[in-house]
Length: 311
Image 1 (cartoon, rainbow, N blue to C red):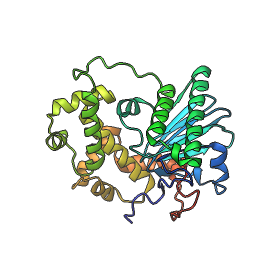
Image 2: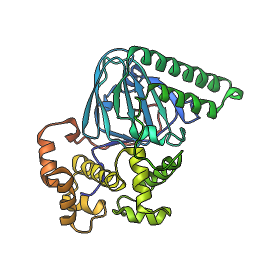
Image 3: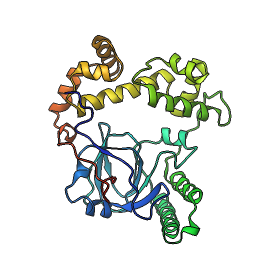
Image 4: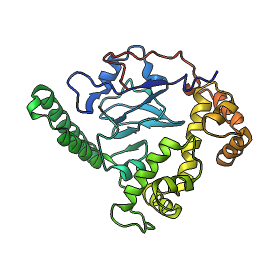
């Protein structure tokens, strides 16, 4: 049956009481207490960002078919739309910052270059935790004294936290677009890809819609994301294909249609070119490996409760 991501819990951003500004902070202990049924260990797809730091303990996390061990100093950045699960956080302690898309503007390049999970040394972790503490105190002050509330200040504090925590991004050596030009072009291209990748499979389609030529999109994407515009587009289509194959019971023909391929043969050729195996074989091999992503829990109804929008 063609019912979409039926094995994945869809998470919507539902701010807690006193968190109206598009950002809030909880911790792993709070996550565990709000989730006695351990739904965190099943695949979920948030429509918001989650940035986590491990202050103590060890654990593991999975995002879009990659497993990431976590230890003291680990940072995890889950972007909106990622299919992920907290596979083991029973022994982890540390903050989790939740924020809406758009709450933090102008961070496109850093966000794109950052991995899902990385490790900081002790000094950088201490400074990042201090930045979290500052964010928490300002947030609490805004909740208890509305006249002190400042979304702009909270946004700046969140940006400071990420700038402190993010791994260093190597400077691009082949970016002919100066200043913030490539960032703006890439931001527009990435947004368009996210909106249209199931319909538009050629970079020229985006170039026409955005008013740039293909070479400009390619240069900007390479400068911001380290890859060409065509590869960036193909990887986005491929990722969604994998999500559909892994998390739904759609037949391969249904996956092809969902992704805008009118001929299943073209979809198979595309997938084989990217992964070296046809989609049916990839689905079979992935399922036989027995990862938790292959589980098929019943859909969870969304309720507007304290834990319905949590990670």
